[in-house]
Image 1 (cartoon, rainbow, N blue to C red):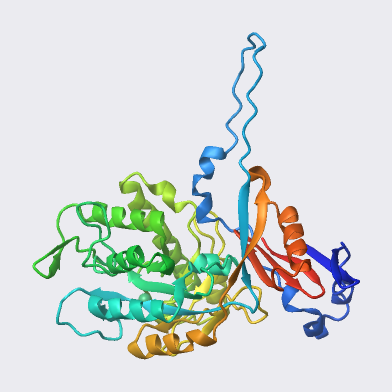
Image 2: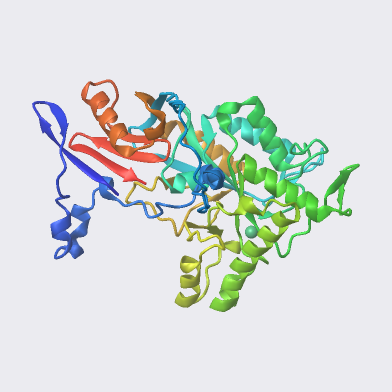
Length: 429
Ligand SMILES: [Zn+2]
């Protein structure tokens, strides 16, 4: 984390590098750290975490060295590449963002069915999406939240939706045209998003590759397994990754972790990851897995019994090298999960509420009390440097000094800053 403390001078903020005054105290005042641990210096623990936006990084990687046979020196002048300046704007939170997190399971497309604790009818799901949308919510991806990349449209409130126990066809299926099927939960979420783009389409899918049957055909109101179900499941998973429905680890066989040894717990995570990659490889799309986040959800919200078992979770690294970023729990009462800039941020106990009518109503009711962002235009930046922190930081500083935008948390793409009356600090990455 870079820190740019600033001094006030004649009512204006001036940028000045100096040592964080907390640092000298750290060595002998560790016990009294609370006074030296303001919100603005809270580290973002997962910087460098692979991002979905970097999925095309392959094309920009340095190519292997090749032998070049010298030929004549070109005489024609090289064309100067045209630099297109781009307009940047910041999502500005004057108060620390907080989000409720919903937990769904299965969906029932039948017309006259009723919802239960772990089964939501598609008719009820539609009503819930409308209620949440009209209460002011827009979706944020779980992984973006954990990295502090917290954007929703101006005036909207963040909401995270998760679905557990995949992959079932009532959760995610594609129709003949490759679109999410109308008889699946994600199909309804996708079509709701098409009609309400402000709601966005970001969802976390906690899967168990070892104990879920995928019934790939839906006719006359019933699901059945037909030849090719593995490929159909793979295509649905790949579509999800390409469109914002991100598969995450819920352990291979949905086990009770308190009854497993640390080695068995490790196998459950690793085998689940391996099976997902094998499934994507069936349709030649294994490369989609390489930037997946590594986030765990505890089956039955049960922790391993021993410290060694719990440590296995914290230490788990995905096959593509991503460390565990968070561990999801769950319950009945909605709680708010703070941004990673908050001292209350605890990625090892991320609270979720089962998506009951009670939880949906409660979440809709407290929307009004939640912070929502404004937008601050930062001006034009040359394209090739537009994500460098330094010029963005300076621009924010000038704009706040000029009184055009308020103090607060400024999120610009993947960069986050905190501007307050004593200065500006880069929070992430
Ligand atoms: Zn589960």
